Image (tube, rainbow, N blue to C red; front, side, top):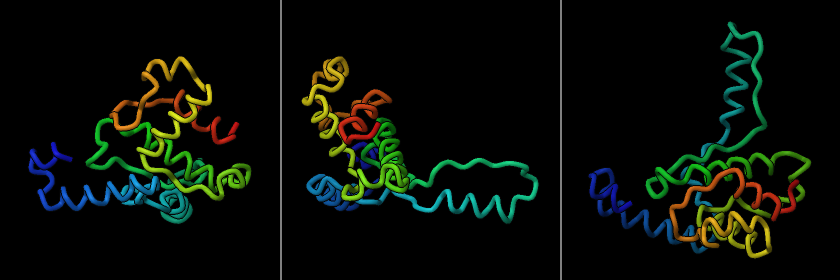
Length: 157
């Protein structure tokens, strides 16, 4: 966010407001929802049912909320945002909803913490070694392996 202020993309006042919001989100471990867009697949389904007469077949995935990057994670947060979208989708699927019903979509720092906790449980020692057993507070990119570790630690096959 400091870079955004330096580039004139964010005012100093907005920076301090966003920082307070970020600190509250970090403290709770829950994503604050400012980057979440709900109902995208429903809107697409409606569009293809009513407005798009040229289409023969359209396949849509399971419903999910979309999580976009923010000023604080632009350029490095896509893997975390992808996990948030996957997590929100799994919560809406009967097979997984019972495992996740009491869980909320975590914020990026909480996701980093969850991955570190999974590493401490012995999941993916090579991946943990690659990151020196530390993700929290970094801008490290994560990928499919770290997502797999998270899902496994949540009991999702």
